[in-house]
Image (cartoon, rainbow, N blue to C red; front, side):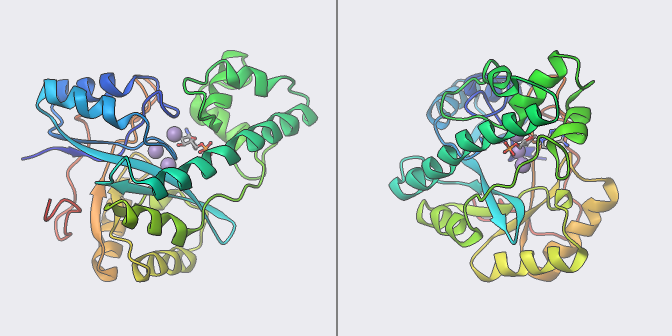
Length: 276
Ligand code: AMP
Ligand code: MN
Ligand code: MN
Ligand code: MN
C-alpha cells in the first residue's frame, strides 16, 4: 500500500530539518508520497523536490496557511500548488509579515508576566529570516527551564488565556482558498480536532469551507485520537469532502509520529489523492 504523508515542516518555517533532509528522512522511513507544508511559506519546495529526485519518493508541493475564521485560528493545508504562482506568493508574504509584529507582542506580553527577553530568545531559534512562530518561543522557554517540553510550553504560555498568547488576524478563509485555487492546488482543513470550536461551530466552518471550494479535511493527524479518526472520517463523508493524512512532523523527538508511522485512513472515505 502506498504510504502518504501530506503535512510536515522544515527549517523554512518551524521544523528542525532542512527541506532536503525532510524528504530524505521520509524516503528512508518508507514514505512513498511526501508533501512539504511549511507555515505560510513555499521557499523550501524547490530544494525538497530536488531531493525527492535522488530518493524516488513522489513529491507534492504544499504549504500550511494561517487563517482567522470568526476569531479562531484555523490552518489550511495546500497541496499540489505551483510554488511560483505570484498571487499565492504575495498572499503568503503578507501573512508572514504579520508574524513579526505578533512575535514582538508575544514577547511584550510574556515580559508583563515576568519573563523577559523572549522575543530575542525566540529569534535565536529562528532558521528562516522570513518566518518566526510560537514554536521558536516554545524552544526558548524550554531551554530556559520555563517549560518541560513543547506540550508543556504551549499549555503554560502560548495558548489562549496564557500570557504568551496575543490575538492576531491572519488571512481570511476565502482569501486562503482563493490563493490555493489560483495556484492550482487543493485546500485541506488541517487537524480539525485541534480548534476550540463547538461541535456546531466546527460543522459551520467545514460547510463554509466546502461551499467556497475546499477539497478535504485531515482525518489522520497527531492532533487526533483514534476515535477522532472515525469522527472526522464521518464528517468528511457527510460533507462530501476528501480525507487527508499527515504526520505534522517538525523534527526528531519533537513529534508524535515520525515519518512512516502514520496509521492508514479509515475505510469509507475518499482519499485526497484520488485523481492524482
Ligand atoms: P504559530 O503559527 O506561530 O501560531 O505556531 C503554530 C505552531 O505551534 C504549530 O504549527 C505547531 O508547530 C506549534 N504548536 C501549536 N500548538 C502546539 C502544542 N499544543 N504542542 C506543540 N506544538 C504546538
Ligand atoms: Mn508548526
Ligand atoms: Mn497546524
Ligand atoms: Mn503543521
